Length: 167
Length: 408
Image 1 (spheres, helix red, strand yellow):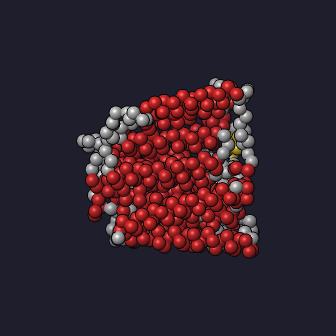
Image 2 (cartoon, helix red, strand yellow):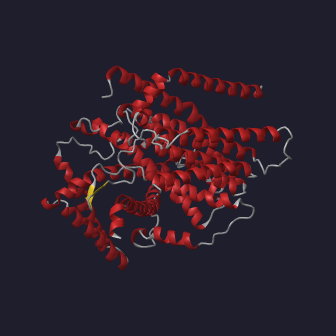
Image 3 (cartoon, rainbow over the protein chains, first blue to last red):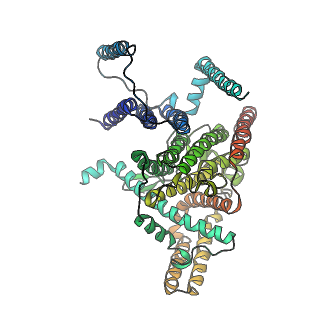
């Protein structure tokens, strides 16, 4: 067992445990904390693959900004322990179907892949500022600008909603 | 055992470095509290701590013992897990962030390995991003402490702190983009080396001159991120008792305290590295006589300490102060010896970086002795309406200048 594989299993276990705990926790803050564990564990997995930039951004954006906002809102609303209702009839059978379909898809993918999976390049475009910039602003400039536009629209929507409440 | 040592040398060196840095950082933290109390006291025409040890120098030790042995009650109705997790998280993240700072360019050759000053490897590509990632997580320590305490003042403190940190993190990140554009790299060592491109310019080559606007935004936002005066609203005594750590006692309180002081050190190092040339000397490279500056500072300081110690009231002070003074004087004289010039050359870089860090720590304390606290609405308006537009303007301005005339 190489150290890399060991670290992978530790991080993967952390991510899966965090995700399970996210669903099973009763208090919203505990669920949010579990989600942070998932995010940080995923960042660790990215680091393991040599994608340092993606790992840092994962923590800054998801672990930091977005989850802080989640925690902030939960604290602000002073949300208490969830009241569990009985499983809705609609969610039961289709959910089960989805679980089976997803498991089948993953199993099929694993069965089809032969031999070992090649690790991503350790060095290369994704680790230098120049490489990242030319990827974002040359190769993928249209998706990037479109995403920015989408986010701008969302921000404007939020501002409009907040304004309407005031009047 | 020797085979294990040989095959895991890198790992063992790193662990030893971590232990060493931890010891140094905690000691510096302890004496930073002494320094802060002394400086603020003198600014307010008081003596500050002066009972425990000569000049109150053993006060940090007494405080540490007090923190360890005080009763540590857990208030009723707290969320136990989160309540214990919060101080741990705050301290762990603060200590992790300092491990990314490089303290010198040249490695020491030890047991056939190049040992760099600083824990992270010098070719860490995401240096500044990693620091921001850790800072971004630092909010949780404060926010969760406030929430889990099951008490109104900590909750208000935690809420304020989350809102403040979200607001100022934007300006903090945007204000360094100018520096990153000049350096073309996230690596902290590269950022310093770019400032040494023209060794003859000395201080004029530092980022502070093209990036004065970026520095102002960065420093203000960084002070807000570390919850220090004038941005210490999360723990505003007059309104919130002690803010987010009201319900924490004994060593759990000390952990928040150490976390705050450690992040002060990290921010000071970042200011020095990104805007003030890091470990570079402010003098042109040809002025080699400035390399004797450590001795020029050490010898008079040592001699003064001896003179002061002999006149001190207590027997203990009469022994310990001249003792320390003698050590400093001897160290200063030793650095002048021709045989020890390689040591003198080696300590130049750490000497300059540590001096700059010290200056910024003094500015922190100075502000605490000078400035009143912001009101909450002033804080938000300042962050969103002034600081963020200014830092964005800095990015645009820097980009245009670099496009037109190149990075240098």
